[in-house]
Image (cartoon, rainbow, N blue to C red):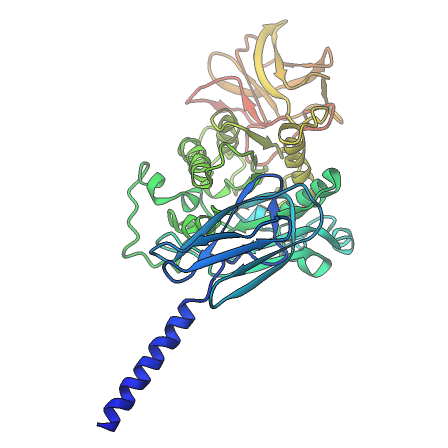
Length: 484
């Protein structure tokens, strides 16, 4: 009898102990000391506790404490207004059994940075694959007004409420930037300096990932059947539809951001038409999840690279088709911008080292379109129309208000007649704003292509040295090419 009473007593004690554990208020990983909250807006704080647990929030910039209550599932959330103050703030979160203090919180500009390995590439580079300027960037990295948060690479079959693995918010310093995304860091460091306000960068990328992996099940299912029930989530995770959205995006969608940067496409290069559907669908999906409207979305066109077959011309083995699809997405995604990289690729390294140039071009988009620096040139020259003239073709461009430029002779142009056979052509800038293309082999030309191959070095720029993307003036499904 005494033994039964002891067992009951122990069971009761264990239950009370477990209840006390469950009653502890828990915050998501991204809500912590050292974080940057989007300034001068309404943000959300959220977390978990026992069902119906009362939670009190005291913020140093607010005169009154705020109170909320966990719902039946134990989730609580509350809206909080932020200011333009640049002073460090404190947030205290209390319940009957918890007392959490978040310190050194800043208000500033928060940007989400995602994609595959070219976004993931850290300041220190990869093995045998450098990031140019890494040493100088590292020694100058100390900046208490630039904060970094990294989501580690984990996949999930179902949407998660919190990230499983991560590097918590930390101030920019030599030791913290070395392993952080180079593109994200260069973008954020310069944005912080120019705006002179705190900047927070959330990095969530996975090398080799497909766009399908970053889309929710609800949206992805409209394009293909998604059934992960019998899928081994640990194998090929970065190519499994919805797997990265579930674990690396969904847990972040309550954290208010200013905008997003995206560098991905290499893994989808052989399906340009599908990418043109999926990528805009992904952006729309993310915007719906965040629920803050069409926030700025700036992305990078993939750079030229050999891809094993530089003779590919009219098949999807030619990455010019995915670059074309990415450019066309500019018109399909509201409030977007593109960074062209035709001049900074690497023929035998898919991770070109000039990451600061990539970040600069993303930054120009943000400065012009998001922050009102209208004098900053952000848009590369884009082919707009052609005129057959003097045995050749005159090409005209939009976004070339102050003209076109080339360091040396223009290269990479080809021209074709009605037979759809493209020959190497001579090209030159005329009237400082047009390009004239001609070839003795094509007396009656009808179409031009520029940089229409896997590996090429772009030679055509505007006067602010923003390179023109590869382009074609035709829409032919069949065409051939005469090699030099």
